[in-house]
Image 1 (tube, rainbow, N blue to C red):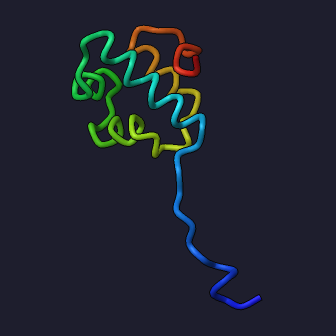
Image 2 (cartoon, one colour; image 1 turned 30 degrees about the horizontal axis):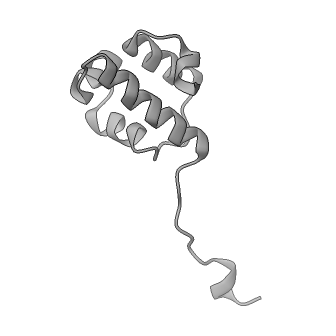
Image 3 (cartoon, rainbow, N blue to C red; image 1 turned 60 degrees about the vertical axis):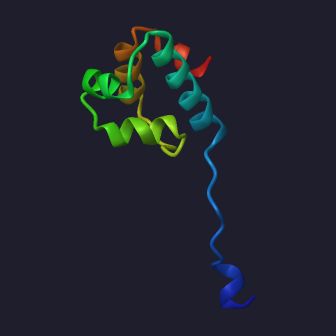
Amino acid sequence: MNASSCCAETPTTPSITASLIAQNVINLRKARSMSSAVLAVRTGWSGSRIAAIEAGSVDTLHLDDIDTLAKALVVEPAALFA
């Protein structure tokens, strides 16, 4: 095995879970006529973090992050995985 084949960069794609949460956050936010800026304020997170979550590029959300998002969107946490 040569060095170029062992360490080749592969493009990353959002995980299925990240994509599911992303789409649900967008849908729930829009259903509440909420902007991403308002969601950022309600979660206490930056707008860029909300944008990354909605893009599906955040693969690791801790349980407290899920809880924070659910509270900000006024839903049960399970709704983010529906």
